[in-house]
Image (cartoon, rainbow, N blue to C red):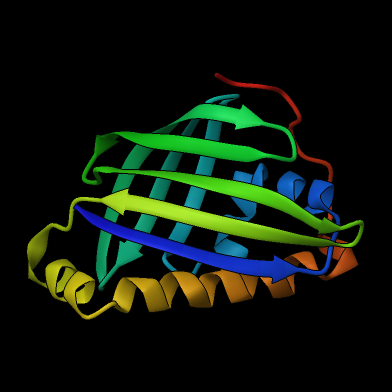
Length: 150
């Protein structure tokens, strides 16, 4: 199983960073591999992604969610077998550390080669840099879902 752990510090309060991360349908604005996400209810999403030129679809279930602290999920169907967690750490009133951990089973030659050479780490690091640009723009800061799961 492949694993990536990446961190980015963003210049927004923890509430703003967390709120944005609960707006799953906006992920294509900052996650390069995401084509679209449809949220079907409070804990289920349907993803369309393009990884190494291959289009895939899968469903995911939010298994744990605590406002301003963490969001965790597992894939539940389709071509992907992965799990992840995003945690939010208050550095100051105006700065937050966002840490993403993804675990997945690399399938196919390109994904296995990418995992071996750290391409996945690079992609996630780039996407977190895009998240930083996105969330630090006040026009993109919206209220998110603040319920608890798990």
